[in-house]
Image (cartoon, rainbow, N blue to C red):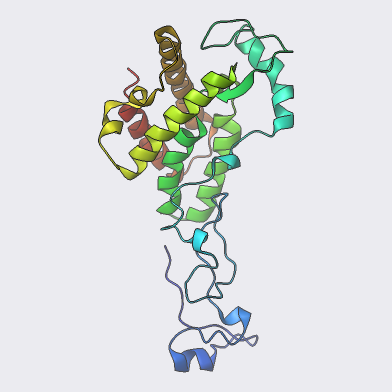
Length: 250
């Protein structure tokens, strides 16, 4: 992360003498405060004035306090679910990919990300918190846009399933990613399905495993061919491969 200068600049474009005498920002005016170099919850850099003693305008903009991006930045709007349902069901031959049961348009099935958003965002956070290369900020912003529009919400990564299965998958993936990210214990070393809650049949868990792998495989191709080429993209691919290797899907 770039270093912050120790003085502000006056309207005339000259260094503030008060800041120079203090050896730091004098904070006499709002514009004499340092710019916040942290990140907002959407994963983008802030840039607001940091008015407190910290170099961040808010505690949750400090990367050391905000280790993960809020999954809502990738989530589809609820109104979009109705529009996409017919497209997804056509792709899935009118069935839930996990149970192989027919899904009617009138049934209250939930739209599920086969590759959960926590998984999609874990490699992104590695790139976001340690940006490098020229135009690093722009690369990270473009990567987030591509993840939302050319990866996470692709038809091949969506499925309509029951609320119970959707919640089980969410808990399983979140538990794995949380432990993988912070390496809190050795359970994540056993793979993704060591976090599977009880209550699902073996056939269903195997289909979830297969669909997750297929989604990763197609998603990886989409990243290679559809994402804007950048250093951030290459780093994301490397980190994503590490996550999926740890999942032990095959």
